[in-house]
Image (cartoon, rainbow, N blue to C red; front, top):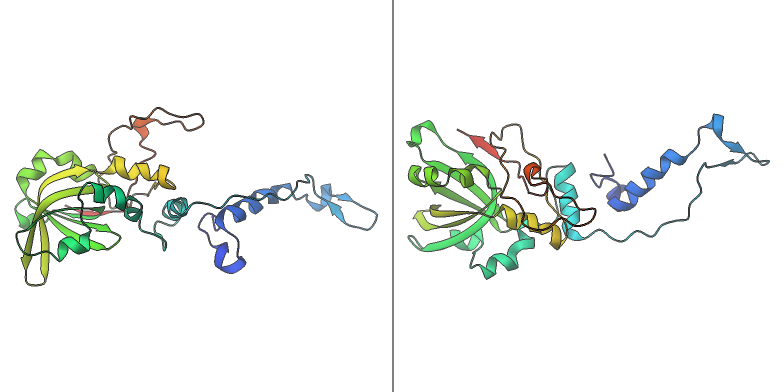
Length: 239
């Protein structure tokens, strides 16, 4: 577990993959009772294998492993791997959208961090999303919530068309249309690694994205109903 969490890099200088490889070999070390004792008293391992030169793990895959085993990362934000694609779809960063003037139209995207639906808000839901530049606070009116309930509750990556609402230093984006970007987030696997983030105990929604239309490759079996290749941020949901 320490190797999977990349704990040996700062202390021993071992990359995650190297540490895992070394630990896997420990099972081959013989117990003293079964060791082959040589004349000089040295023992011979059960299995002798040459040193392996392991390829470096891609940056995206490192982030994948961080989220899988630790639940966070100190490396690149997952959305950073999608920025070129998002820009081609005219998606702004959260920082740029939050700096816009009041009532301007915008399109932003980010991982869902928090969903809130206070009883005193008359059915209005508030969602906080995050990209590599910061966070954006969304306002979801009850009518939009009912129209796009599955996306609101199930999307791990939200792409939002909306209007900036600015009151002093407080900035919200009033959503007009939501798009589920979970399939795009799942494609990070082809850009350096998948991001199978765990759910927190407080996340009451455990829905997956739409099935992937790609044909499964050899040794890469995809089971749509299990949603194994979708990113699942550790969200906090209050309703």
